[in-house]
Each structure stands twice: as C-alpha cells, then as structure tokens.
Image 1 (cartoon, rainbow, N blue to C red):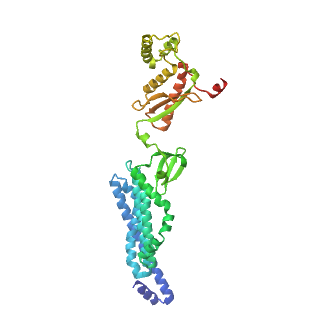
Image 2: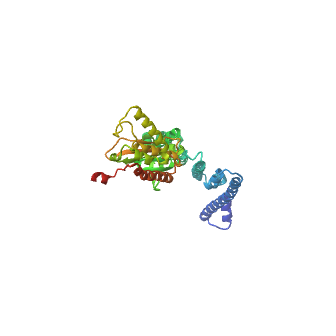
Image 3: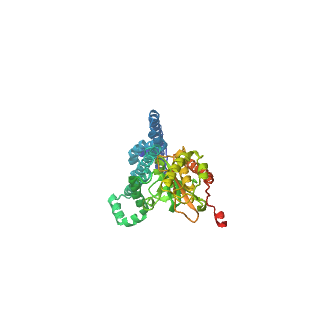
Length: 403
C-alpha cells in the first residue's frame, strides 16, 4: 500500500520504473528503521526512568541489580517488536520469520539477564550466598537454549517441532556422551546442595587437586577455589561427590580451632626428682599448690608402706617430665586465648627414635589463620623455653648422633 503510493509519486516526477521500485523499497526500509530507533529510544527512556524511580524508592537491592544487568534495556525492545510485527507483513511477509527468530533470541537473552540478577542478589545476601545458584541457572539456560534453537529451526525451515525432537531422540546416545560432564555436574550440584557438602565461602582442602582455599564459585561443570596464594584451582563438580576432601566449615563454626603439636624430649633427661629439685620447682606459681599436695600424698603413701627411700627408685616419686606435663596443662588453662571449655590436655605419646613426644592438644579461641599461627608459635616459644627449668632437654639430631 505504502509502496504503491511512493511509486506513483516517483513516477509523476519522471523517475524510471526500475529505479523507482528500488528507491521506494529503500525509502520504506529506511523509514521503518528510523521509526524503530525512535520507538526504541523513547521506550528505553520511559522504562529505564521507571526502573530507576522504583530503585530509589526501595531499599531492596534487587531492582538496582536489574538495571545493572540491563533488563530494562532489553525490555525497551518490546514496543519496537510490536511495531515490527504490525508493519513487516505489510512491507514484506518473508521477513516475518527472521523477526520471529530474533524475538525468541531476545526472550532468551532477557531471561538470562533476569537470572543473572537473581544470581547477583543471592551473592549479596548473607543467608543465600552459600547456595550454588550458578549450577541451577546454567541448567535453566541450557534448557532454554535447547528449546530456543529448536523453535528457531522450526520457524526458519517451516517444519514441525516434533520433527526435530524425533531426530534428537535418535541421537540421544551421542547427546548423553557429549553432555556427560554437564549431566554429572548437575546431579552433583543437587547432591552438594541437598547434603550441604560445600557452600560458597567454605574453606576446603583437596590434596589430589592441589586445592587449599576458599570456594568462590560452584557451577554446573566446575568448582573454583581461590587458594591462599591467590591462585585459582578448578575442580570438576562431580569430584566433590566422588572424591574425598576436607571442609573446614565445622571448625570455623565451632568455638575454637585445634592446636595439636608435639615437643620431642630426650629420654635420657627424664628423671625422678629429689628434695632439692622439688623445692626449686615449688617456686613455679602455676604448679606450686599441685606439688605441695602431691608431695604430701606421696610421703604419706611411702611412710604407710614402710618404703626404703635410701634408693630413690623405691616407692612413689615425682618425675620432672610428669611435672612438666602438669605445668603445660596449667599454662594452657590459664592462657587467655585458649578455650578451656573444649578438650585440653598434654599427653605423652609412644616413644620414637627421635625422643618422647609430649603432645599439646588444645583449642584456640581465635580461628583466623594468622592469629591462630601466632598463638601457636607463642605457646611453643614459651614451652621450649620452660623445658630447661625442669632439667629436661629437647631432642636434637646432631646432639643425639654425637652422644
């Protein structure tokens, strides 16, 4: 209709028929493009200002994230599409199938932006950020693109959707083989979420994959771990179900972080304490009362049983190693940064060729890595310095060989 009027106008001015037909088509095309651009420009201003007004009036971050992920910008194409669906059949019906295909793509891209907004919102929320939303979004997007491609092929070829689905059924074995990791990742993501195995923000250690750091992303195919040296380790998602790893979340949520380390004492330095040794150690405030009560108990036992104490080996005696273990426990209980509500002990392990291991087992109140290591070092600095006051010696390889 419009083209006929333009042709009649051009012919009236003596424009040749062949050229006038081409010129009329070009003018109509340019006019449609200009109108689409104007509609899109006006629609973008109106829709974007509407979203910004809502974002300013609400405290919720979701509408701000919609703007950030360009959802209003994509929605501004909708009025232009309505216009094109009205004008294209009049101009050239053959272009309608291309427009339909573009509409399907626009719909999928818009859904992707909305899902991206949901993902960003989850990561901002302290109660939701641990959920591996990336995996589910990727599954939804795979499904949407799968349906979208079938619809686009159906529109462009004019064939029924069932024809393509039947072809895919015949190729199902190949599809399963190609998407094996994706399917495994999806199943693993569900298992991880249901069993609460891993959350974003968890500290995990997986020796087989050289991963030791914080989980920063859990998606359909991979889990990304930022190691403490700031490198990134990528682990297949299904490995978190099939392989073993350490999740330190339990420690971080508990009331303390365990300190479990040993001192190696030379066996030759262990001895029974004589009266002079005992009197000297009574000056140690932490164990003074303990020594007095134990000496009284031991003396009563030895007197009652007529023990010959001319030889120190006879009867019951205090040892320097035993008192050192008591001192260590008292020291740890009185330390302001250890949690004495959790297990706290100093125990002797089975002797080795390198000495007698005296193991300290306690929990640090502060679980932050650098402070924890600092506390552990401070404790063992003190204990290593204390050993000599009990006439004990720590194992030294060179000294052991020379002796």
